[in-house]
Amino acid sequence: MEAQPVVLVTGAAGQLGRAVATRLRDDGARLLLVDRATGPLASFAGEGVEAIEADLLQVEQVRAAVERGVARFGRIDAVCHIAGGFRMGPAVHETTARDWEFLMDLNARSLVHVANAVVPGMISRGRGAIVTVGAAAALRGGANMGAYAASKSAVIRLTESMSAELREHGINVNCVLPSIIDTPDNRSAMPQADPSRWVAPEKLASVIAFLLSDDASAVHGASIPVTGRV
Image (cartoon, rainbow, N blue to C red; front, top):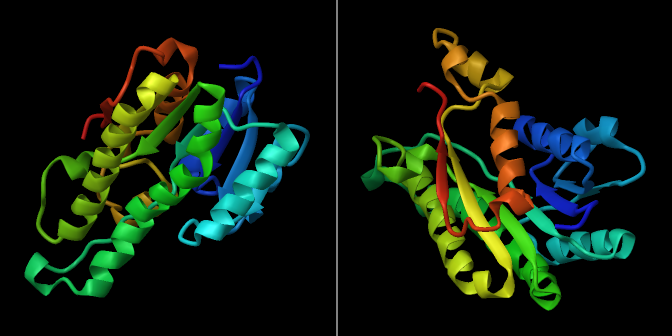
């Protein structure tokens, strides 16, 4: 990758997004930070950082964000697609079309829209790196998690498909599979749990930074569990 790579981070305003942005900035990257609201990214303001508000379910907004980033930095070298979400659901037989579409859109369709906007430029340059965020819970179904597990499993399958499609173009595509990430929201939701067993955002950010680096140039289509001691 370039000495000062340009990295697009989606879901940048969340706990993991900010941890990844911090790690990449400290490593010398220039950043295109995208989220539906960029207020939490105020501390990143400065040279080499562009924060853009965009709804990833609106393909025109995704393309506009990418075009704005390219206009400023000249290119996008890498993508970390963090945007997505979790929601416990009803049992599969009680799942509505709305339940299903909400999580499939949030976790899978958003990735397709980002790929639509970014991958052609990477192909034209003959290099790039993409890291997606799946979930350890996507490796098998669980009660009341059918739609969520399916949507994150779709992220894994899309990652593998993109890897097969893009590796000959010099583009690495890989996925991380975290368990519970140690965030204030998760601590509040599970007050009896031991968060020291969870995954610290900074530790997950280190794995993502590796996968975006030239040191991971031989890694294609991997789904890497990052599960702490859960």
